[in-house]
Image (cartoon, rainbow, N blue to C red):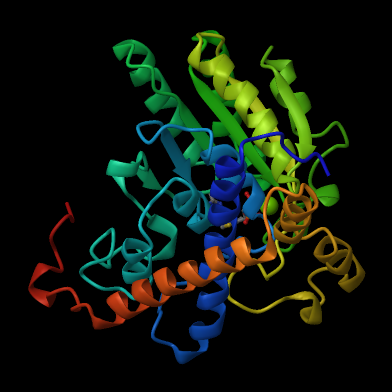
Length: 324
Ligand SMILES: Cc1ncc(C[n+]2csc(CCOP(=O)(O)OP(=O)(O)O)c2C)c(N)n1
Ligand SMILES: [Mg+2]
């Protein structure tokens, strides 16, 4: 484990963020069968370290653009759980007034101008935000989160080209979980890997272990520093794995979507457990410290779900608002 050499407060901040995502999504899994959450949910259980390692290095004003699988990114960027939970329950108090659901999380005050379910859509949006930051010289940077499937879209290549040409303060963060829906990576792409595509445009590009929070933190930090100091874009390909099916709270290996032993191998590399073990091994914190964080987070999640379920439904009279 590449365990980061950081002050105790920062190590705990990372643990808290990682655990907040894990427990929030586990709560969705627990409650989804009640059929009160009508939105489809694309869970990021197993992939949390990428969100935390990247977003923990950003300022609140920096932009992130996420996808259909956005809970982890938005939580790690600081978006309040109440806004997310209420959106999942379709309530007026949700971040998009209950109209958007899980795939359209938005929180401009936390640097989240919008998330999009159009595969590859987050990438040019982030390039636009990075261009605006550069033109205004306001010191902000933008991050595009996207999956391995999105790297097959034209928008990925167009944005790489444009960002390289204009030296945009933009980080391309590809979460390579080796599947696009049920289609395995090897059946879709040649073996050169995703990072090689960035190198083709002259962009500093790396492939790294996305389940090792210390590695993500370090690699993301270098890219962010480069972007902020005028060094232009970077492409970071993080290898990781989603534990649940493409959509919904269930696993999918029973349906033959992927091999059980593959999932089991990745479960052994749980990003949360790896980080927790590293943290305890560092001797800087005790189990009791971590348990206290977890207890507080459970209260925060109870509060968010209670808030969501007690919130009003959107008024039907507003149905056509925001529609052209
Ligand atoms: C342009 C477009 N094509 C197809 C879809 C249907 N679709 C939704 S998610 C998805 C797979 C995306 O895979 P990837 O980019 O690897 O992200 P992951 O789900 O693995 O996080 C597809 C094909 C879509 N939403 N948008
Ligand atoms: Mg994928």
